[in-house]
Structures are given as C-alpha cells and as structure tokens.
Image (cartoon, rainbow, N blue to C red):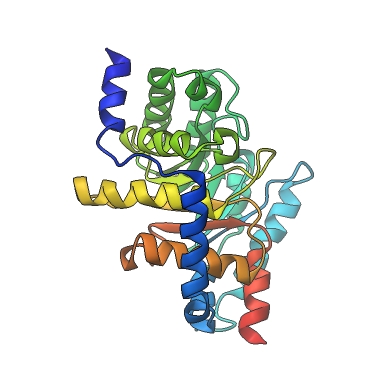
Amino acid sequence: MAVNKYEMAFAQFDPAESEEIITQKTSRIIRDHFARFDTPETKKFLHGVIDHTSLNTTDTEESIAQFTERVNDFEDTDPTIPSVAAICVFPNFVASVREALTAGGVRVACVCGSFPTSQSFIEVKLAETALAIADGADEIDIILNVGKFLAGDYESVATEIEEQVAAAHGATVKVILETGALQTPENIRRATILALFSGAHFVKTSTGKGSGGATPEATYTICRVLKQYHERFDEIRGIKLSGGIQTSEEAVRYFCLIDTLLGKEWHTPTYFRIGSSRLADALRKDIMA
C-alpha cells in the first residue's frame, strides 16, 4: 500500500527525459540566454541569493566568528549589492554565527541530519535539528536518505524528512538530494517529488562532499518538477544549487536555467539559493571590475 501511495505521487508529474535530451536542452538554454544575463545587475542579484558557506573540518568558533564578521563588514559598502542571503555552517556553530551576525536580513542556516551522508539514527538527526533551532538557526539543510531511496524504501525516506521538518518547528528546511549519487534523471525526479510531498521548503542539489556537485542536467530535472508542482498545487517551493559553483560565469549559467525553466517568481532568495564558499568574492570582483 505504501509503495502504491508513492507511485501515485510520482505519476502526477511528467516522466523524466533522457540524459541526451536534457543535455541538449540545457546547453541550448545557456547558449541562447547567457549573453542577456551576463550583466552586473544579474550578478548583484546572484550575490543576494548566496548561502555563504563554511563547512570545514578545521572550522572553530573563532574562524566562524571571523567568517561572519566579513559578511557584516561588507554590508552597506555598496548599497546596490545586497548582502548574502544566509551564512551556512555546521550546527555546533549556529550560536557563534548568531552572536556575531549584525548584517541585516542575513539568515542563519546550518546542515543537519548527519551531514553529509544521512547515515545515522533518526533520533540523532532529530536531536541535531532541534539543538540547532534552539541555538537560533533560521534554516536547516538536511539530507535525503539516499541508501534507503535507492533501495525503494520510500516510506522510510519520507518519514525521516517529515520528522525532521517537524523538529525544525517552522524553520525553512532544505532537502539535499545528492543528485550525483542518484545518477539518473528518473531517480532525481522521484527524489524531488518525494521531498516536496514530505514537506521540503527547498530542494537542494548536493552536499558537495563526495558525490559531485550541482550540474545543469540535475538542475533541469528538479526545475521541471518544481514548475509542475506549482502548476498543480499553486505552491512555490525553492531550489538551492550547491557544490562546485565558484565563478560568476558558472552562477550566470545556472541563472539562465532558473529564469527559463521556472520564471520570475523564483527571482528571490525566498525561492532560489546558491550554496558556495567562494562565489561571493568572485561576484564582487566582477561587479566592481
């Protein structure tokens, strides 16, 4: 019965297209629109959708405080460039960011749910999320249980997401699909649908920690589902691109896909984010060149 419920959900959306067709379409979209969006205005917008990220083994309370101060220091240096959307850290550093952060409108995000593998007890995942919220997190990035998903155990995958969303107590929850591990467009399509029906506010491409980062092809498949979800249920859910996006050119290429496949409703950090540790500096350099 449980499998039938999920198969019925999957059937409400168009089937995944072939890898060859997706590659052709993404290449065409980027080729046709890149010049139009390769502008200072686009790059300023992109700066404002960044989840400025530090997820290093060497992070300390002091280094995260300094990382946060750099965001504070940038505020108002150029009023035409918005601050980053959020600072994203490990859950044990949420309090450090919250204490140091003074830049207006910047949210505190953190990775939870046994990042980056999701391989732990659900009780551990729930505790991690609850503790991060208690320390002041506004947003929680969790990981789809890829192992259970690939085994076809959709019930367990959905339940884990639903329980972590509940533990977030109304905070924004982004579900990381780890698209590189999912491998096929059909798996990415199904994982996106499952995350949405389980309460995800955002669907995120990847952790950037071992299974590859964002790709235009994975972005295409996720965007098709998000657009159809909006059309069928009149609800907008967000997309976060993460893993390997470091240059202005790469960010603009992805913006071409977001604009073309989703539309202007997604031209806001409320529904579009890019997770990166280096992109902010690259965009500022290009904008001010």
